[in-house]
Amino acid sequence: MDHDTEIVTDISVTENGKVVFAPDVVATIAGVAASEVAGVSGLAGTALEGISGIFSKKNLTKGVHVEVGQEEAAVDLSINVKYGFRIQDVCSEVQTAVKNAIETMTALRVVEVNILVQSVTFDEPEKPEKKKEKEKPEIEARVK
Image (cartoon, rainbow, N blue to C red; front, side, top):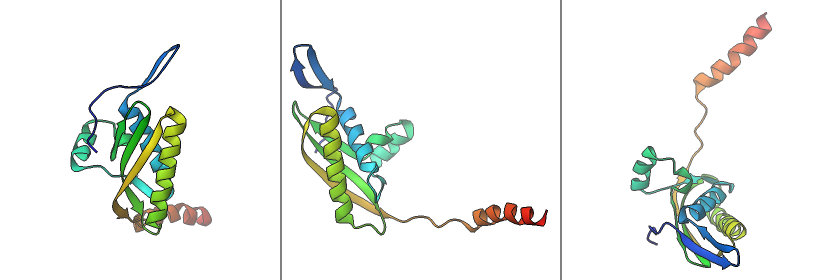
């Protein structure tokens, strides 16, 4: 999907006026919903998004591309999955969470949520220096 450069999209017109969402709003909803799923270590963007992310605060939409129509939305997500989680289960949960979040918050019908697993991440082991610092106060407390 190409990243849509259109600023606003008409969602619905009522007797009180029309409701309009910027595509970044839908992308933010999708990014937050995806990052809250167990097994997702983060969203993964392209190299260009990584460079531009240094200069902006759009981390919630990094790796998220949306196409928003008047009544429907389609989402592409790039994610990193934590080692030890079944990737297919994580992706299924992300698809459900993103679809539910967008449909609940915007009343748009989500037609597809495509996921690209960019990498598998590992938890970094705790550095030995930190363990020693934590143990020192306990030892000093026992000596006093």
